Image (cartoon, rainbow, N blue to C red):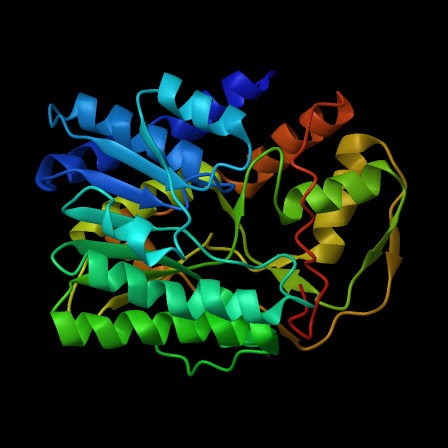
Length: 339
């Protein structure tokens, strides 16, 4: 059980054997664009550790604006080659090093409401810049399950074949991002995979952390969304890296999440038992929710290794002991796509 941030990040970065095997088969350096986000640092470290274990030496290059210099220093200390770059600066992107493999993690979600122009620039214009620069690479691009919109709970979540129906400008811009990658994949014959993540969780961030904090602080929990998916960040990292072997033209769409449709009501009540706190529930569940079905990913990579019950125990222990969180609520209750 991790007791410190260092132990947690080591756990999240530990490469499963499947990732080591995948990176034996993938040649060339890996550049990770938007590496300083919530997942990027542990994904970069997992890529480095897996490459070393696979006997496949390569550069792992992390690119970001690095508004927090501590992230830059930490990545460099962990053996990642870091480059400061504003990815919307085409001249700066043109100077980035070549790499056979690109993992695109850049984008804008939180703060999108009220800053719509930058949201569209980051989520739609930026892919064209990257596809021009890395037209000779393979690209794994992160997207979101929000592009599906609200789906009937009884359906068990949207599969990759479901029609996109995004709600709100953030989700619409994310569908725009996918369309830009699809266009340039065809134009430049770039093999790609597009990952619709829904959603990664660790001990400092995620829907489960939001719920645990609300229970711990005896705050009311809005049930209007009703149901959700989640996946442990280490498992999401592992699937993303294995997707470097799954790129195709046109891009292969892959949902990344856990196998369960989870109830906010039941999950909050379980946290109440784990934390010894009363649970305040408000509102009522509706018949639709933001849900994805990741059966295809699980057929490719196997199911996630971390069960939700263990995630919850780790999170409850983390919150109970007053350990740090990222302070970035997921706004899981939003049904209109406002973030």
